[in-house]
Amino acid sequence: MVVRISKGIELLPDDGTVKQLFILLHGVGANPSGLLPLAYQFRKSFPNAAFVLPEGNSQFNGGGVGLQWFSISEVTEENRPSRVAEAMPALHTLVRQAQDRYQVVQTDTALAGFSQGAIMALEYSLAHDGGVGRVLAFSGRFAQLPENAPELTTLHLMHGEGDRVIPVSHAYSAYARLTELRGDATLDVASSVGHEIHSALADRAIYRLQTCIPLRSWKQALNNA
View 1 (cartoon, rainbow, N blue to C red):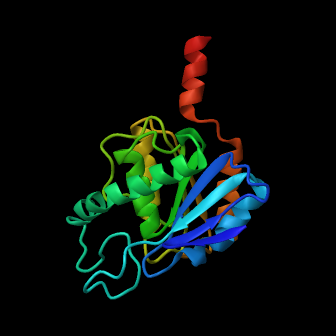
View 2 (cartoon, rainbow, N blue to C red):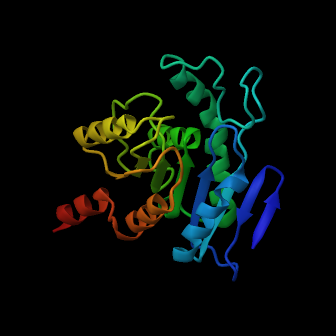
View 3 (tube, rainbow, N blue to C red):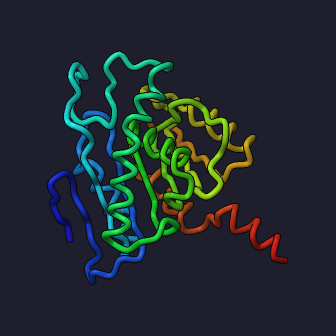
């Protein structure tokens, strides 16, 4: 069932039983409906999940495009982190309210984003480690490479090799840094794919969700052995 809410879309299980929660964040100038194909693809594998597709902010003055999570007007490598940080409290509130509404714990929550939405999702894992169990970043990047890796959130990076908006080099750099910091992360790169959520990457994301045991679970098992 698709429910149109005041600032976004919610897709609920047919029987009303919610066991997982997916929050999907759109890119710059887009809107929640653009992520419905991804939500429907995920729903085939997770029929008891609720999907929340919120709207970004109204157009920022001088931004030049529609909905955004933070203003891209005159954005630079230097000021991007502060802009993301300013937008983070609103996203944190959104995630917590959705978890409370559907009574879903953090470990059963996945935060996914495309492009600018992926930036917000990745930075959420740093600002609120463990606030969600998984982050799925499609064609995204960190605002700046992290100094510490999340300990309680698993990150799945999905990127097109031909992405000319956010080059795939950002994904490789992020994965290398997370590996260096002993973070829990995976990287999947699709050849002949640009700046888009390609069905092959969506399928790979589902595979990662279904098969990847969080590194923290392995560590706990070894400690208890």
